[in-house]
Length: 153
Length: 100
Image (cartoon, rainbow over all chains, first blue to last red):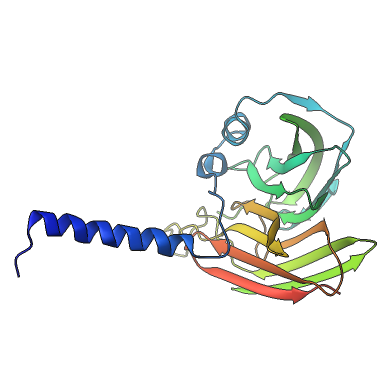
C-alpha cells in the first residue's frame, strides 16, 4: 500500500491526538520531577535550580529535628515543622551529599506544615531545611554527625 | 511496588504514615564486578483526598531504602485517602485507605 503525503500527515495527526487524550486521562497528575535540582552536585546550584532567585533568611519559625549523632547514615530520621503562613513547599538538603537535594514536599492549603522522612547521609554534614512561604525562603540548619556513611560506593 | 499506609484523624487533622517498599538505588553504587548499578528510585509520592491533591513529595536518591514518610493534612475520619507513587522507571503503585 502506498501512502500519499496528505494521508501520511493526517494519520500522524490522528495518532498524536489519540496520544494527547490518552496521556491526559490518568487521575494522578505528576508534577515534573526537577532533574536539574536533584542531580546538582553542590548546594548553591541545587537551591538555585529549585528556587531560582528567592531570598533566603534564617528563621526560628522553622524547626528542623534531626539526631545529633546518627550511627547509620543510611537511615537518618529528619522532621520539619513550621508555623509560618502560606507555605507552598519544604525542601531538605544535606550539604555534603553527592547530590544535596533530598526531597521537596509540596503543600496545599489542606496541609499542615509538619513532615518526617528518613534520609541518607554520606558523611557528617549540615542538614538544611528551606521553607518556601510567600515567595521567600526560610532556613533552619542542624548538624548531624555520621559514624557510618550511607551513600554506598 | 508495595505501599503500606496508615491514616488517623484527631481534632480535624489527619496523620498519615507510610512505608513504601523500594530499593531506592542511587546510581552511585557498584556491583561485584565494579560496574555502576543504574539509578532506580522513587521520584514522586502524591496524596489525594476528596478529589484534591492535598500533598505531594518529590524525592531523590538521598532518601533511604524503603522510604518512610509522615505528614499531616486537614481531613476527617471515615473518608478515603489515595496515595500514589512513581519511580524513575515509570513504575507506579497506589493504595486507597480509609482514614480511621
